[in-house]
Image (cartoon, rainbow, N blue to C red; front, side):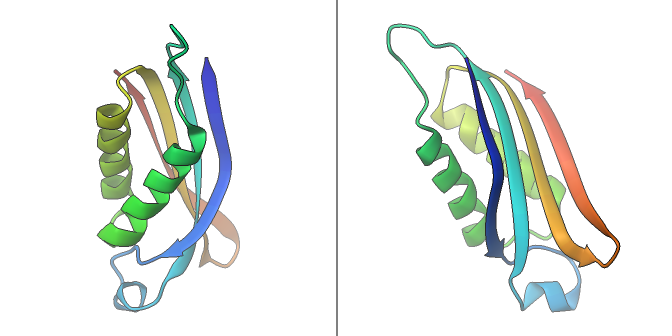
Length: 108
């Protein structure tokens, strides 16, 4: 089975610039996860979305790369049936003429 969460949007502290350490900014997270659906064991996508948002808000990451690794570790630990994971975090407002994202692909 595949779960896809598109455009999970919230504000958090993320970034290395001084201004980013004091003001929340909008981020957009996309997730695609393949998992084994067996014996009615499913993954609650609402919990996945809430975990990602909570992780980013509480951790106040400096780098998107660190956020992606923490989210990956959290999701693999919480949901042992995940087979692969594609995560993307976008900072849509950081540059005036484009949307900047960092992407991580993982296999369990």
